[in-house]
Every structure is written in structure tokens, then in C-alpha cells.
Length: 96
Image (cartoon, rainbow, N blue to C red):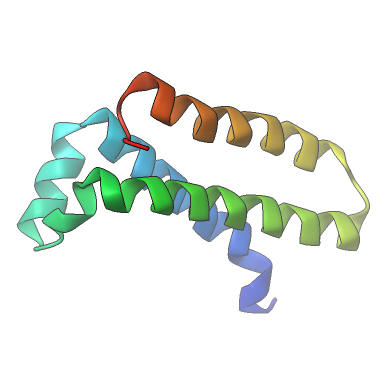
């Protein structure tokens, strides 16, 4: 299996990381700060990271759609992805 078949998994990891940082989970914030990546918890970095991760997830699932022909995984993931990106600025956790 080529690495390009795992793009959606990388997007899920990135979106999960961005969402946990936006929520301010202390364990995630302390580990990120401890390894010297404290700049990642700023809103200016998290918002684009969240959007990029969601785009990677949708891109990977669309590639899977072309390969397997099943539309339901794409539909099930696109709706919450759009809701996540739309809700982040509204909730005030990520600035615009």
C-alpha cells in the first residue's frame, strides 16, 4: 500500500491534535510545550492546521470513493468536518 493511501489518517491525527489544543486539554498542552513546540498552541497556527487537516481527511476519503465506490464514508465525514470548521470560530476557541 503506498503512502498516499494513508492521507486521510494523517488528516484525522492533525484534526484531533488541533481540536484537543483548541479545547485546552492540559496533558496535550504540557507535552507540546515540553518538547519545544509551544508555538503550535496559538490560534494563528491552530486554525489553519485544523482546516488543512479536514481538507486532508476529505481528500483521502474522496480518493477512497474513486477506488471503492462507496459514498457513505465520504458523506459521514464531510458533514462533521464542515461543522467542526464552522463551529471553531463561533465557539471562540480559535480566532478568525
